[in-house]
Structure formats: structure tokens, C-alpha cells
Length: 359
Length: 165
Image (cartoon, chains in turn brown, yellow):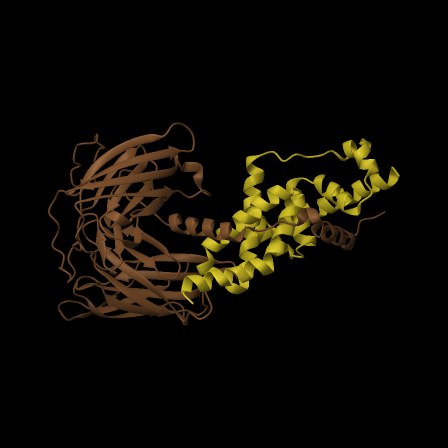
């Protein structure tokens, strides 16, 4: 008996319809795991600026950035929102790390417990590795300020002194991040696993929408909204993104509101603004959706972009009151390797009209 | 409805409509129900993690690619158990089994992993050769030759079995 292709088709369908092939999907677990993966997928960390060693309980950690802050135009919001804390408070949080990309992870979960007495917060960290014994470490930090410690090789625990919407990791390599609310303390703990890269700082978005960094600065930012050709979900007509530039930590970055992705990149060394791209591959066809983000030089105004794709769009806004304008260009369909922003024209601070071709 | 709720509802509709097909594909690729369940769970979780950028018309295609990639990764990490047809032909269980599904299952189990993948994607998913090539990360020529060898192997196994009856 021959086995023509139609018989193979029939046979495969018969087998696929058997009770053995019935697999029940655990939908809540799919959503929970997907959200966890999404939270930790995009965290990146830069090269080291300095490391603060973990000390035994009873000692106070030194501030991470004990140096003068460069002159950056002061925004209206205070560097750290003032909060009234109780005299004493205890709080704890459980941190989990991405279960799908566990090959470079040492720790499965971390318990963080804090005790506030006066203006000192004592932090106890119990880290559970995938293999081996628990690691128990402690450190202290001043209430209402950012504090952190490296509690084990590759594991950093930090305290952000306010509730947050988003935490943004710095730099150029994949890392793993989870956050936990410390409600009684009015704070958030952040756990970061990163292979052998010393801690370089943190940026976060508070619930007031203001971006701050671990050096105590407000980070100039702009909320940019743009139309999209295809909608990520029914009813949405546009996407929005927060773009920021941190001169203290020497990074620029973005938070994509619709996709909950975020990343940072080192500041370009070029005196003229830079253009970089984030991209998503679409499996609906062999093309890319591309978003390019760039900055005019300080004092530049009236940008005008020349884009390679006719259907592409761009928008621009000033980052806080910094005097620097950021622009975002979006193309829903672009060929792989094609440059989106071909030309940037603007008025420089002397009033001259100039243009350049981004590299 | 909040954006997040809308997104979850949207994804829920997708899982309801495409979940059975993905489960069947996973079962045909792996031959094992538990393994198939794990693959489908992980593929759907990864699809949900990228839901904001998955174009609605291409959601199934995206999820299927994730599923196939996960299966390929799994095969790379371990040596799949292969069953020699001659062993089955000599076993009491094989001779006793008359169910067509069992026969198809045994035939699939005789195929090397890549032939099995190509046969399932071409003849269960009814995908064109170019799409199968894209999913597996190989050339169209490789798909053609792998498919041809897979079909030839299935024909030989079927003829051997027929000859033994």
C-alpha cells in the first residue's frame, strides 16, 4: 500500500483529533508568566561606576554617588518628593526572577524585609539560589533616600524611596529585574541579577510621572504620543512613549507605555544630536516596525525631519525644562537595515538654520 | 475597559480560537502529551509577553514560530528517543495494535526530528515550503529534500508493515 500525501494528511488529522492530543491551557498561568517575562525582559545594565560593598548589620552604607552633580537645568519638581514616615515601620517583599531565561541566573527568588527606626532602614535579604544554600545578608540605608547593596556575586538589592510606576535598568546587556512594594515604608525594593557587572545606578518613574535617578536628580523627560498604522489592541488610536536623557548617569532612554518595554543607551559622544533605533520584528511579513529616537543639541529648536519612508511620522518635545528637544520617528513598515531618519534640520542656539545626516 | 484588560481579553480570544491548533501541533511534533502541554504553555506565555507588538493577523503565525523554536531548542538539549521500526514490528504490542492513530503515531516516531517537523508543518498545518523554511530557519531546498526523504521513509515503513501482514 502506497502512502500518498493525502493519506498522510488524513492520518495526521486523525492523530491530532485523538484524546491524547487534547491539551488544556492554563490561561491564568500563561498570563502571569507572560507578564513576568515582559517585566524582566528589557532590563539592561551599563559598565560600572563604582561598587559599594555590603557591610554587616549595624553599619551605614555610603551614598552611591558622592560627587557634585553637573549643572542641569532644574525642573520644577523636587529631586525627591518629601514624605512623612512613621517613627517605626516594618515591611517585606518577595522578588521572583524570569523563569524562562534562567540559564544565566543564580537566584530563583529573594525575600526583602525592612525595619525603619528613626531615619535608618535596616534591610535583610534572604536570597534563594536555584541550587545550594540560601544567602542571608543585611545592609542599612538612610530613610527617604536611595540605597543599595550587592548581597551576593551578581545580585543587587536596592531601595527606591517612593512608589514607582516603572523602573529602568541602565546599560547595554541583558539583565533580570524584579520589583516589590514596601507599602509600610512607602518604598519599592528592586532586585537585579546581572552577571559580573557592578552596579551603575537606577532610573525610575514615580507615581507622579516624574523620572528620578539614584543620584537624587530629576531626569528630564518628555511624553510623546504618535499615531500607529496597526493597533496593538482594539480601540487604541495611538501609542505613547516617555523619552529621557540623564546627563548624570550618562544615558538616554525610553519607556514605551503601550508595550511596557524600556531601555537605556549610553549618551552619544557626538556634539550634534544622535539617532538610535528600537525595532520590533513583525511575523506578519518580512519587514520591520522601526522607532528612531534622537536629540537636538542643547538650545536647538524647530526640528524638521526627512524620513526615508513616505508613511512614517515624527513628533518632538522638550525634555522637561532642559532646553533640549527630543524627537521620535516611527515607521510601521521598513526594510531590514534601512535608515529611517535621513536628515535632521533645526535652528541652532545662535539662530542659524542647520541640518545634518544622522549616522 | 483599561488597556491592560482589553489586551488580556484580546489575548483570551486568541487562545480560545488558536489554542487547540497549537496543542495539536505540539502533540504531533513531540508525540508526548505532557511535553506538548509544556511547550504550548511556554509558547503562549511568550506570545502574551510580546502581545503589544504582535500584529493581530499574524498572532497565530507568531505563536506557531515560538512553539517550533521552543521545540527545536528542546531537541538540541537532549537526544530524542528514536524507535526502530523493526523493534515495533517484532513486539507483541505492535502486532496487537490495530488502531489507525497508533499506526500513524508509530510511523511518526520512526522519523528523525527534522523530517517529523517538516511532515507535520507541511501536511498537518498545510504550510507552503517557504513558510516551513522560515519557521525552521533552513532553506526551501532543505525543506524539499527533507520532506522528500520523510515521505519516502513513511512509504517504506508502510510497505514493510504491509509486507509483514
